[in-house]
Image 1 (cartoon, one colour):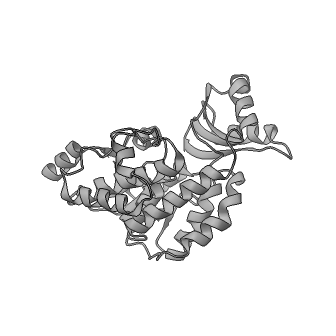
Image 2 (cartoon, rainbow, N blue to C red):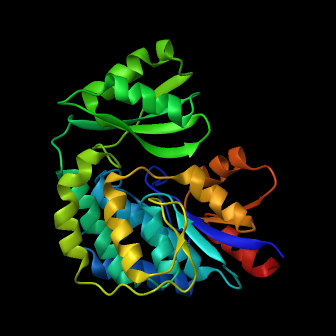
Length: 308
């Protein structure tokens, strides 16, 4: 018997109108959406559904919005037998809710704070990120070492798929790589629409504040393993998981190794829960043999609940 993993996307998957179809059309999803609204100090539902004030793309708003959408979808699903869970960066918090490590109302507060700290860490224009296409991790790592100086750094940040590595660091070096990447062997280098150097060692500046903030919440052992971005293996111990979530701020997302670890454990079905199919696309590059299911909408939920 094959095993099943539920997986959750991270920043970049958000879109205006997200979860609007669930609201008042599915009782369990609606209760999560209302809970998010009760916990937030801004109108999260208006931001997700209509984005009237153009706030959805701001890190401190994007993070709770994505977590809320994923957990609303998860709550609406019936008969999901899960062996493992994994999320990409911010998506790892949805995994912690799914596996019982955190309550949703605590998790949504934590990711709001995480987003605020990340957004405030550097003034605009200091840090950035870019996707490097067509080179493997070692080649990208070498280029980063060559470009980095005593004053400015660039580092691999998301090890997403063979030929798709995201780098993070000082914007001056990101721009240099974007301009000269082709001459260094890359097919393309695309700068990303982010406000900071996430998952780089530059983010260690917020480690203490974040660590102090999350101490107030109850972290429980996971009811099934959470494959963590930092070490690419399943963990169930509450303290280990919490420590790894602090390190996650400034460490690369080991998505390739995490996916391979799950496949090695016998996982042959990945269910991506949340907006978009980014993770399914990455997994497809790593294995043609696994089944991929995407749950993004009320229609997807109904289809699953009726057929399963």
